[in-house]
Image 1 (cartoon, rainbow, N blue to C red):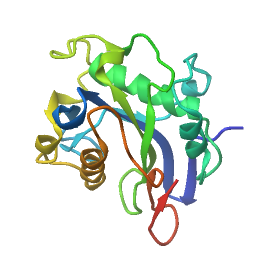
Image 2 (image 1 turned 90 degrees about the vertical axis):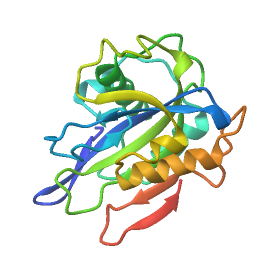
Image 3 (image 1 turned 180 degrees about the vertical axis):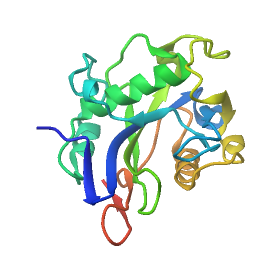
Length: 213
């Protein structure tokens, strides 16, 4: 049976989650979609983040096309925390959260439309902990109001497309800042050139570790 979270102590849960890094354009001119969490949010209040959230039970049975390359699927299966979780459930969660928070919906699915580019587990001592996978997507693959976000739920405010360098100047969680730097270093005019595997900040155990999946 697939699991969506694990308990590392009597009061400390790590929930599976997925975030969508949506880019408008590519290469040096790319802009990334960011939004601000509410000041009263229990997790990362007032921070600017990528759209995303935890995996729900319905995500395991969601009817979605295969949007990942075989290499990305293999990487998503590595180093399970608390039990395996399917790549399909993670993608379903990321797409669902993107639609809820921005109103954007996948239009014409392409093979390998998404790329698994980062993973991070929230360190101990935080109000909530997540085992988050980050997927890179292209804005052109989504329908909806790309500028006014009129169908957004309101969970994220100040939704906007920003050049990567401008996004890094926002009030960001540490891991979001790291991911934006990784994007700047790996985007070219035509493709993503990340090498050496998917970066993984593993805070699941007693000692933090940086791995490549």
